[in-house]
Amino acid sequence: MKTALTLSGSIRKGSENRKLQLHVGRKLAEAGVDVTNLDLTDFPMPIFNEDLEPDNVPEAARDLAALWRSRDIIFIATPEYNGGLPPLLVNTIAWLSRQRPSPFRQAVFGIGGVSSGKYGTIWSLSHLRDSLSKIGALVVPGLLGIGPAEEAFDDNGDPVEPAIIRKVETMVHDLTHFSRG
Ligand SMILES: Cc1cc2nc3c(=O)[nH]c(=O)nc-3n(C[C@H](O)[C@H](O)[C@H](O)COP(=O)(O)O)c2cc1C
Image (cartoon, rainbow, N blue to C red; front, side, top):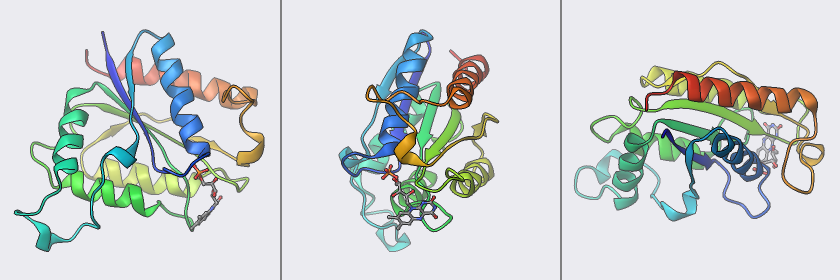
């Protein structure tokens, strides 16, 4: 059985990206994948600073890296902050990029995001794809950008727009098709 992790770059209560994370998690589970939905609140890490290495690397960085290495699929939902990535995600990626063996070289990655603007995180997704690719991750091609956020999900947390539903289906197909396991 294939295994997946999902996570959200926003940990605020009522996060729209958490909704997307959980929706994709449900769809992967329906496709027969064993899914774990993570909450980055459970992996607290200080702002990355090389002076913290090697003696003060947070336990959370090692734990999260081990989890990432152990799964076939990783889905990341990210907000867009000022046309880029939120600091939580940048910090998490910085810490994980310093762990060995690389936690970016085992799973296949899917990315998506929800923002309040109508362009739906296309800039933050572009940054995330670029950064993940440059550190050796394989990211499936779909552009799952959703906005404006307030109209995106129904009361069950499922996307409303048919085009978004189709994009999630394609993402789930690609993630299961291209992953090991
Ligand atoms: C610091 C900050 C910067 C933001 N910059 C953008 C932006 O560049 N583009 C955009 O569409 N929305 C932007 N937003 C609005 C977010 O898209 C919106 O708050 C979204 O709901 C955040 O995701 P979440 O609900 O998962 O927390 C910004 C919000 C914050 C707090």
